[in-house]
Image 1 (spheres, rainbow, N blue to C red):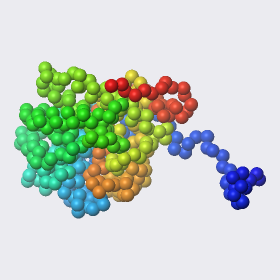
Image 2: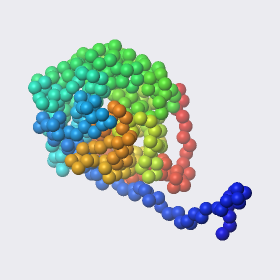
Image 3: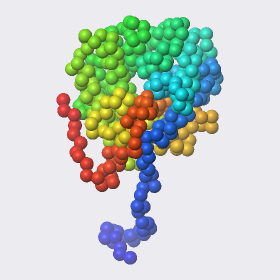
Image 4: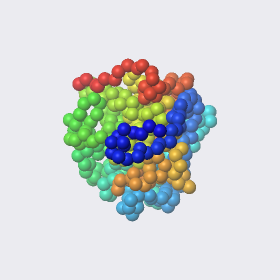
Length: 416
């Protein structure tokens, strides 16, 4: 055997490496499928995630049954239940808003609409054993906002089905979160989202909280579709987890409330930046359905693609992204992570991790409830099964096309 030249110079014996042939196909290669099969899988994946939360909360037993996995469980127990409920419902709401119908999926939606409405009643009723904490400590501001986001996304099937007393209690709960001062970060959008829901359903809001959040976020724009999380840029997924979806939705509420005072230039900038960031997110999905584990809150799993899912739901994907390639990419990511052993505990609750059960990935603020932000990736289920997004065979997404050797067009930054 020929010795390695470098090892000869060093007077050492070259190591012998086993000469294993490279596999023709990655062991993690994704098999392309079609829209109807993927929709069926995603619907059942969503309700699998939802079942423990909604079944317990609808019966007033969430505090009793839900485990609290965290670096310090006693420290996070005060907020984790609202985290689970608010985040789960924010991701489910668009699907629920399609309403019941005679199809098997439509009947399944009816079941979860009923569970969600019963859960809201228990969450906001001060006499309920599952009355949620909306105002003590700091974390409840975050998840009051996700709860508000859910209500904005399902005006008919969630808000529209609440009785008068529950509506009042819901608005009271959201208002009570105002005692929590948001930090000078993405948290400003939590206050803005709560005020947006109060404006839409209560007819009033603290416009200063909305205006301040918008102005600050716009001042933190760093270019090419990305905002800083505060004055500095953070290389993580918070543009997608929180900032851009909430910015889009709050601006839509303001436009609807007062079309004459809408700032078209402002709204256009928000929209163009979201489209660009959606392109960036899609390009981060590898041929194997993985993505870079960058930054904090990785335990939110595929919630990292909240904005991409939101743009698909809005039918606002840029022309460079075909709906079928976005569908295939999101499916590949969700399927890969959900099927990892350890994602769920023996009773069906999510466990901390990015791929399976990895408690070390959870920061001090991460608990069981936090993990349900992953549901935001299911937003395209709010498009009916007849929509083009769900029609036809998969198309390969950008990274898959490139690493298969396809000659594709170049990528360009968003110009100011």
